[in-house]
Structures are given as C-alpha cells and as structure tokens.
Image (tube, rainbow, N blue to C red; front, side, top):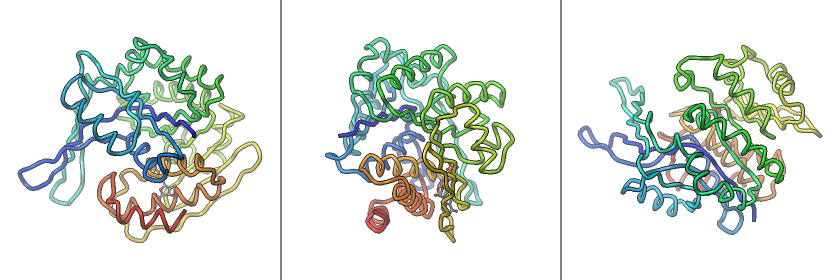
Length: 315
Ligand code: ADP
C-alpha cells in the first residue's frame, strides 16, 4: 500500500458560527491536501501521514483525535515540549470579504524538523514513503536553520526512491515581501523535487512569466527531469513528464463561491488517484472535478454529501 507523507503546518482555525460565537477546527494548506487525499482513497488503498507539530497540551490531543477521525495517520504529528499549535481567525467584513488574522510566529510547526531530528529522522525514513509532499507555505514558516535541515532530508528521501512533490503556493506576506529570498529558497525546492505543482500565478510572481510554455521552460531550466503540473484555475493546465506534454482544459465553474483550497483539494485528489493506480489524465480530470466542486462551497472543507456525489461522478 502506498505511503504518502504530507509536511507542513496545521493550525487551529476560528471561524464565525454566529455573530457572537466562533467555532474551532484544524486547518492549513497541507492539512487540506491530506484531508482530500483521504476522502478519495479507502484506508486499504493509501496511507496518508500528516507531518506537522503541536503542543503536549489539550489542543495537541484534539488535533491527533481529529486526524484519527479524518483517517490521517498521526505518527508524524510531533509534540513540542514548550510550544503549541498556531492559530488563525477568519473574519468576514460587511461585504462578505474574508480576511485572516494569524498567531503563528512562535508555533510548534516552526520546529517540526528539529523535533523530528530529536526523535530520529528514521521515524520518517523508515516509513519508506512513496510520496513526500510539501508546499511553499511549509518552507515559509520554517526558520533558516530549520530549512537547512530540509534539503538533506529531501535528498535522502529521493535516494530511497521517494517522489518529492512541491507546490510553491507563494504568499509574499509570509516572506516579508522579500522576493529575492523566497525565489532563492523556491529554486532549491524546485531542484530537489521530482514533481512541481505550481499555479501559473506562482510562476508569474516568482519569475515574471505568465505563459504555460515559458513557465515550463523556466522550471525545466532549474530541474530538467522534473514532472510539471502547472495550473491556471479555469484556464486549464499544462502537464509534462519525460514521455509526454499536453494541455488539459477544465470546465469553468459558472458560480464560484470561495476559491479557498482549490489548489489543495486538487493536489490531494490528484495524489489519491495516482496512488490508486489511475493514469495521469484520469487523475488530472478527477482532481479538476473535485476542485470544481470545492469552489462552489464556502471554506476549505466542504460537506461530505456534495463531495461524495462529485467523487462518485468523477471516479
Ligand atoms: P491555486 O488554488 O493553487 O491558486 P488554481 O486557482 O489554479 O490553484 O486552481 C486549482 C485547480 O482548481 C485548477 O487547476 C482547476 O482544476 C480548479 N479550478 C480553479 N478555479 C476554477 C474555476 N473557476 N472553474 C473550474 N475549475 C477551477
């Protein structure tokens, strides 16, 4: 059975339940990837591990419980002895526009790789993951010292035959608007990964390139053997590996409600379909169908009923 490890920060999410009350959940870009991966795949088909960090406290216990409920493996949800999980609050203004306030600058997640090292990197390596997925948000929240620990770990995983997938998910704010710094770190990630999953917008913000072919050429300059999947919302995507290159159109959604987790649900669904043995085109079409459903609902995690309908229609 394929083992997939998804690495990044999961946070407590507070969102408005009523005018006066907030409800609490757990969320984050990679958490959505793991969640949609497990929604698509049965337990006996795929094992998904979320590699993240939380405190040795009640919130930490609740995160582990939530992962169990979501059928996500918690073996790599590492407990920090002093720090706790980060938090964000979703605010909605009078026009329905959403904004986010974060409390994450001292979160346990920043030291995930230190915690792993203390427990022994073999905790990860011995799982012999088939896939290791991380994002540019994962990169952004790590300190420089911590990020330096990531690169040799990726090399070790690659040497074990693990596919390394990277979605840059560029957020200027997380890099204090220091584009040069972000670009330098992303280039390292592009070179060490085997599959690159940027949106065209990421490539435009990082390198000033806004066309599929030119974006592919730029990424191949950095990593000539990479598999590429460049996404551009309703404008479809470009896929390229060592045997084929093609564009795939998607059916534009007429009424988009909220694009939160479009890319994350796409990535998780693509990973699941590939791990279940679907070919590339089938997997891309499945991922596009799920992402199209997700953006017709509010929030990152859509209700199960419409999800299952979309899944059954697309699989
Ligand atoms: P990100 O969320 O990473 O910016 P995109 O906006 O490119 O990523 O969206 C990811 C995927 O979601 C797309 O490849 C596409 O399949 C689907 N998608 C996004 N927006 C739309 C849309 N308006 N209509 C149909 N599908 C969409």
